[in-house]
Image 1 (cartoon, helix red, strand yellow):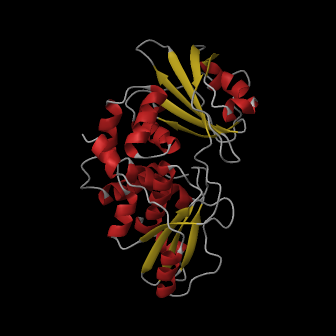
Image 2 (spheres, rainbow, N blue to C red):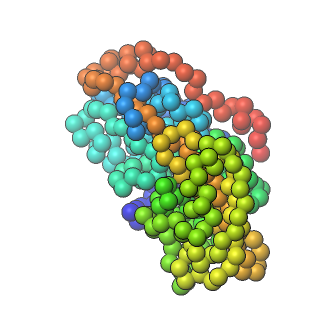
Image 3 (cartoon, one colour):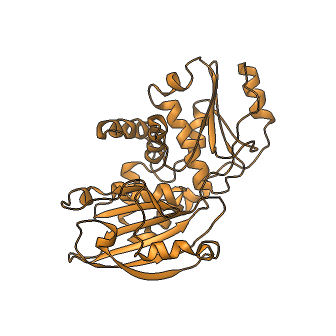
Amino acid sequence: MISKIRRMEVGKTAEEVVLDAKALPIDPTAIAQSRGILVKAMEATQPGISGFLMKCGDVFGIGYSTKLSNPGFINFTIGHELGHYFLPGHPEKLFATGSGTHESRSGFISKDPCELEADLFAASLLMPNVLFTKALRGAGQGFPAIEQLSERCVTSITATAIRYAELAEDPVAVVVSSNGLVEYCCLSSAIHELTGITWLKRGDPVPGTATTATFQKDPDNITGGCKVDGTSMLDEWLDGAPRIEMKEMWSDSAITGKRSQCFSQISRLSQRTRMNLKTRMSTGESAIEAILPIEPLESEAAVLQFFRDAPATNLVDVSAVRAAVAL
């Protein structure tokens, strides 16, 4: 768990890196290259790791898996490794011997404070407060808004939904669940102000009576990209909440990895007490492969050669996106 003060410090560090940015999207590869950090896609060698930060002497390199086809996830992986580079204390902790390779796992579910801080850094870097809030206010509501912001920022649906909840001015909660269990729940400040409600925690079961649970039981709903509407009651999700009917919706389902995630957004539709729950199933952003070199590299020249010899792939080019959505 990261304290509120530490979260603010991490966010401030990221914001300072992109202080001169005038428009979305933010290009993490360009940021890395401006600091002399090598960035390249690498062939996978073992499952479960999305990226790594390599250090040898004064030379740094960032690698990400060639199995990651989602540009948003690639950007977030690079941003995560930049967090380890920029955040005070991270290089010293991760490279206590002065050199080495630190691999990172994706998904916002690590309990390691360094990994959580790197996730926070990546979100703040790619979706800086001022630029993202301005875009958010013009994006509308619900998952169409999150999808629009995801395209505009070139960020994953997961990262965008969480950032959306963090910065939304309206009461919003984003719940991520996998295999019928809650992985995490992100709340807007307006939601935090509510009293008498017990919020979901990691490991809590998805309410068995909710349409989400029924939807997850059928794998064809995921692999088939189904769109389903249903209803449930607010108090089924949140203990202590009033018994208010909600609408649940799933769209654009996909599966490419071993783990399914359910994104549930709860937001107030009006000044009345009606609530709206929109749910999205997506696993296309799960890290499924690793990209670590088989042997440790022992010199700066070896690091440079390793990145030169790695299989080439197109890096994320955000120039066209920036031109299309220029403010």
